[in-house]
Length: 359
Image 1 (tube, one colour):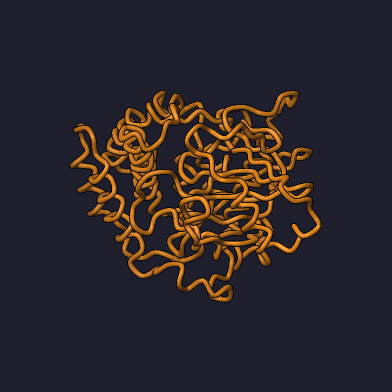
Image 2 (cartoon, rainbow, N blue to C red):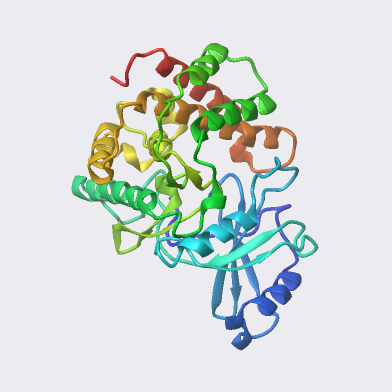
């Protein structure tokens, strides 16, 4: 749990030249003209396992800087320009998208492209509620409902009116995703896992033939939503848009549900994905899907496939992060266990693929 966007001192090896960044930002952001010179403070947001995120303070002004992870990154991955551009095109019509201030493609500043956006204050829920908050079942249900309605509102955005056609290619999206995530796993593979080949064959042969298209966040989960400190059922921002695209909204729904762990889930899921959603009152996955279907009007006939694929995708993400740690590209000790977690998720997806329905 992170309360009020708590920050830490910048981790060893993840610092950058404050003077260079301040000089650059002053040339880009008009609000900084009234702030005192050479006063920039840098802190780091500890959560997140992909892009690095920092709190920038110059006088009374605050912003959030995002940059790619250290070390080599896959082609087209961690595209700061794409993420900043998306926020710039939707934040006027989708109020939960933070406003981007500037994009820097000059790698001489910090060694990589980065962008800076507005800071919003609130609470991020991970494993527990803020100290002093005693959640009852009604609060948990209200948070659940807010998550469903926020996801529906993202999928309802008119992406053509927002000129987002270039952000994705909805035709054949799902088949490309299956092929792409299988390829990513093969490139990051470190261990042989029972059932893996059968799972990959099942995914490739069960892609639904007819899918819808909408703007999708592609990583919409509770700890990517900033909540009002005085009303935890009121979102104030949706964060981490790096994987957003134009694609299948039901895949987006399944990704959300793959993180939505409940007490009845398999023990390995509860252990590897600790989250407040195991608390009494949070929706069951079936309730989440039912409300989404009512609010969106979408048919959820193929959710068995989508859920299986979502767990596999999550496994690949963990495996990619684990490989970075194993190669010494990050010193973050959190990632040491990600290889084992990826293996457990693949085995869970394999078991799910063998069932005829979600049951």
